[in-house]
Image (cartoon, rainbow, N blue to C red; front, side, top):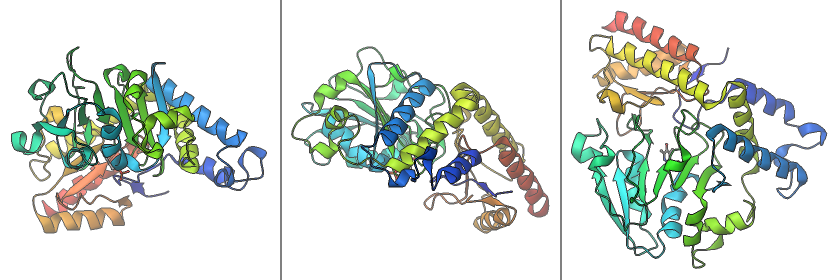
Amino acid sequence: MRPYNFSAGPAVLPESVLRTAQQDMLDYNGTGFSVMEMSHRSDMFHSILYHAEQDLRQLLAIPSNYKVLFLQGGASAHFTQIALNFANGFKRIDSVVTGNWSGIAHSQMGKLSDVKVHLAAHGGDLYHYNDLPPASQWDISPDSAFVHYVINETVHGLQYRDIPQLGKDAPPVICDMSSEILSRRINVADFGVIYAGAQKNVGPSGATIVIIREDLLGRCSERVPNVWNYQKHIEKDGMYNTPATYPIYMAGLVFRWLQTQGGVAQMEKINTLKAQTLYDAIDGSGGFYRNPIQPQARSYMNVIFTTGDKTLDERFIEQAAVRGLMFLRGYPVLGGMRASIYNAMPLAGVEALVAFMAGFQRRYG
Ligand SMILES: *Cc1c(COP(=O)(O)O)cnc(C)c1O
């Protein structure tokens, strides 16, 4: 059996997807070539890209007035790119900071443009990152280009369990969904733009999903270099330059796997069970394990916890690894442990972790 991989990203992939990729490695579909060796302009790759997009549209029920792109640069590139494209002609962006990634996004969004990045709410100042500011606390202006937030903070283990709802007059919402896309049902129409790096919940690193409401593309200016210009990518059907062909192929395999699992609704059920199993173990440990986050803001994807003792945490991480429970070390600035339990982590993996936690507590509690 392979070890359980709790990495935050690049992260676990479904074993059946890896096996399919292995079978296809030397000879994709009778072509005699690996997907890696194919021209992105070939019919074979066109078909891979087309089906990946169609399957993603089906899984997320993406309305027809939204465009889908698989771009490069990771989510980090899009922190700035969204502003370059969608703040053109505006004076202000409203940015919600709720943890590590939205903090970085906030710092990068205004680069290369004159737009003011207004801090709409700061979850660190308000709640020490133990809770999330609800939309009613966001200071937003109807004249802003857009509101940006990160729905699941991968490092801080925070997630908007209730999707923030803004009024009709609010600017479009742009959301970084890197570490939760396809983990639960969402209403795409709540968002102007959704973007997500693939390597958390979708596939290998290298591809970034960008879903854009059509009317916003009118904002993309000719002044933005083509390779960073979403409208130019749309005009070329996602082929303005060479896309990350192999990561897109892998993402396509994951989308098909999700369909065979019963789609996003079924994932949501299993993910809820996995998260509850793990949080119950933490909360039921009599204080041996701790998670500081308010229940309504706890991430179902990245579960952070600590014993409160650095040496003991280190021992936990080492002993877990010996039992095949890998990559449980928390993000450097936070320390402690973090279990990332994305779609491809089976319930059995969480159960194995919970059993290990109980045994560890008996030995050291
Ligand atoms: C990992 C992550 C990023 C950064 O992704 P890169 O692909 O490294 O640019 C951004 N936002 C969130 C929420 C993430 O989890």
